[in-house]
Length: 108
Image (tube, rainbow, N blue to C red):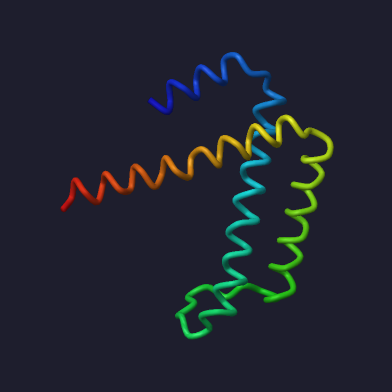
């Protein structure tokens, strides 16, 4: 189903718009994950960390700031595309929780 919807969207949307949507979504994911890593390392220093980040905390913080800067640039230069992409991601959050609820009910 997702492939069909994605294919239809790709068929009728210019490539430049699609690449902007992908870039915004990827940058937003980077910001969320990098922010979560920084918070988790501060709140739960006792957790095992099989992977060490070089230059922690400076390099991850610079990466986070750079990603936020690029997201802000998209927000200023292309507010409609930015709003559509963030809206689509926001719509997916309750869909995920509903799906997860039905998966736990089905497995119980």
